[in-house]
Image (cartoon, rainbow over all chains, first blue to last red):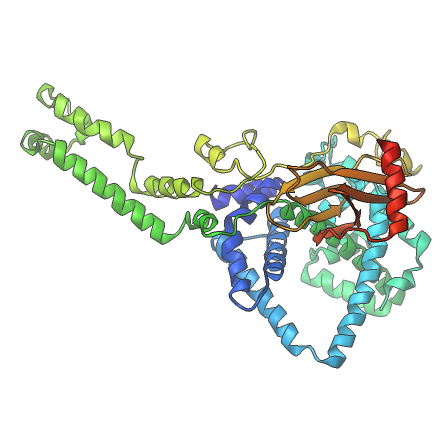
Length: 179
Length: 313
């Protein structure tokens, strides 16, 4: 499969193209980490993170690829692993505490939203994640979800978001979210 | 009913779609209006959470893809490398050269070549036989050098010994036959929503809709449990592992010899899963990371699970 075809499939939301990329470059990308003091798990994490970032950009149509996909992925993996190594080397006692506090805080927020999203149905979940993560516009969402038209997608997205907001606010005051 | 202009603006801001002047106005408004700034932060957190959910979903999908980490698997990644292209080109050129050398009568063809016509188009009756001898091997050889490179690379990938769940992408548009074969071995698990799934909207209907009323809605899960979707990924000589995310349970290990059992206990607000395999019970927690399966050691719990299991049987 050529790069152009892969991008085309991703822009259509075909997640099998992601599987294909994952398998194709797994060894090449994970070696970046494995040959630089990383473990297999770290290597996999870095590669998956890079691939998901690539998916997000490609799915939203915001990606202007000036190199091969493998080169692009390689540079993301390399940068991410450099950052991770840098973070590890900078970890001192105080910074660890700060980091843990932030991580804990983030985890709490993540749990809150996760719980509420979990209570939404599959359709709402998909609309909201397509819109907010994949960066799809309403026309694309309508097409992908087999809605009658763009207005239907807009209405559903609005209702789903409103429902999610209210679910979160029912259980937690908004101040829980602020630092 | 439609999002307010302010909400629309927040969305555009968080999606990075504001132009420079709109961005300046937006940021100055945030500085002046504290409640507006808080609303933006609130939206940001929710959107971050949604992003995390989607990321976890995509990563869970990738985790289920079996990859080969041996040297054979690496061959598949060389499909576009210069080395393979060069080797493919050299080998092909050698084969063609040898065949031409062995079969072509240079004295006979010489005159035609001078005329500037391609060899395949020579129509002189005296040249028919020698040319057929040349053309047949050429047809068996995969076209020009660029195509040969791809063919060589594809064949090297076919030599991999990975075990991947059967899959097909035949339905995908625009793919040539040879490419369909090439991509058969990854798992198609896209769950495309069906129109029937979208026909339940009652939970979200609001009276002030400006667009034609939707008679159905996305329903909120209220407790009726759906069966757990279980997928086993065969891995020999490894400890038992699992991942349970978004209602789907992945089991990694060698489950071919003995059957496993899933015990599902549905409470009012939660669902607990246990695995019974080779005389041991294992607890399953929601996780999007692959975790080791550790046998339960709590005797009381084991006793209760045994009762449930026996009742089930």
